[in-house]
Image (cartoon, rainbow, N blue to C red; front, side, top):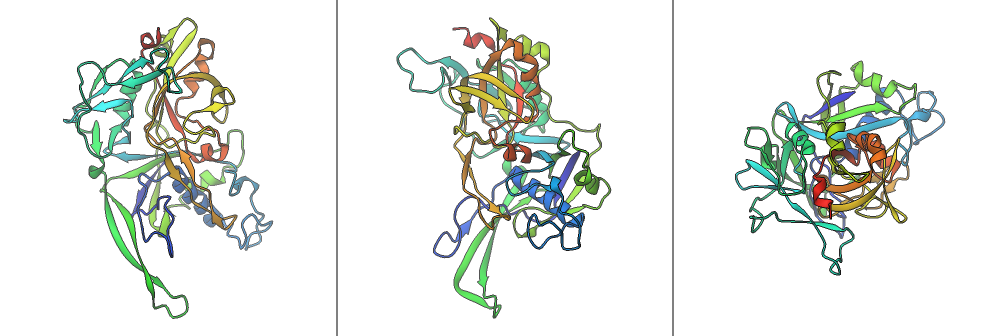
Length: 403
């Protein structure tokens, strides 16, 4: 079930910096919201609208005598809840971070591939056998400032193209590329600490919060479902029947409206067809790309490594692969608050959205590689089920790895 979450006010999702007395006095917002924000808003709305309000998390009975639902999960388990997303939705299309292996020109009317090049023998200080360099004829990166987003329609074209040898994709149509300033703006809020006894301002407690205001027509699109094979449909039914219309999105209980999208009117960006990925096969090896639309978490840091092997893990699959090259941004740090434990979650480092990995896998695993498209990939089950690691598979030019 696809839903649109439309903010009715500003959005405040604090970043990972420590904040409080004798610490930082200013904090910024993360935008777009992380999967955990939308997932927590949905699960919290189910808790309240379904009559499961409790005095203590996970109690045997709720405050009105109902049995605590085993399918609800816990602070370390998603239970039966499954989410993919969120993705920004605007102008009748989804918007995603521009892939890190794409070079946007200064006029915003074309993206171009880096050249994937083998590392010379004896000079390999990299953990991969290939690296990305500027394509021939491009002396330096264009001076393009700020975050840019690519439409889901254009992302599908990008994923279906053989990529990695200086190829170019036209993005001159209106709606192909957006700058962040066209989608949201920042607002600074100055607050004071309040004495809980006198309700007067506390001396020395002045702090600043960075809120985000989305432009009219902007929403967040998510795919909300329950665990495959589970008969419990209450988390979905509460939304479909309209019992959940307003949720608290992010900090300060900022309201957002939830609307269900028709089952046939939307899907995630399409990936390459089986024949297109089959054309990326040489000598029994299929080369492909994985683009991450949301931050991904791997136990091994920035790469999906298990022991001495690379493995792409989803809820249903474990696909062994060989990592050839990667375009990865700086780590995205995220903590949060654990309601069950009544304390802060440890800060983890995630692969940022927009990162692209070049892999090769056995041709006999082609069907499994295709199933990686629009799945959640990562090493932590709880984070995957929240929507972290939403991945789209793409073709790549196999000739660049022929040597």
